[in-house]
Length: 146
Image 1 (cartoon, rainbow, N blue to C red):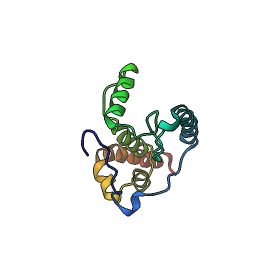
Image 2: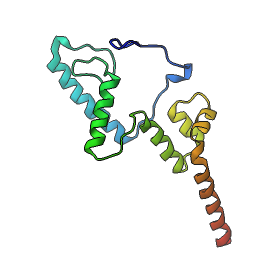
Image 3: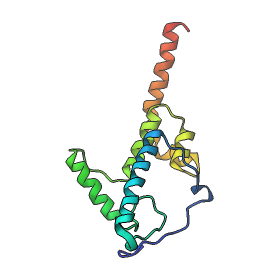
Image 4: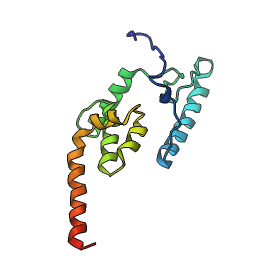
């Protein structure tokens, strides 16, 4: 991709195109976003470029990754949160799901990894804490006599 053009490419694997299960919080946020976007479309009139993207500029064109990053960092700073990459939200989501005991296979599917081993290798640092938690639960079972 050049500095001035967006290049759309094929998906990585045949399984990259998949249905997503949306929780109510996300679904409601997307509905609100869509309402705002329809207002932007009306305001833009003939300048609107309908390219089928969910997140766009005020005239329907794709968002530039650098602009998303700048806006994200600005929001982090305003909220007094430590700086990190926008993509790190994906890793945080996976780490939180795994820490909550969501099975690795499910997390792998949510992330869209083609193989569970990709998820297992990438999030191996979480395993020791999960092992401690599992063994702690086993200890509790033994202690309670169940």
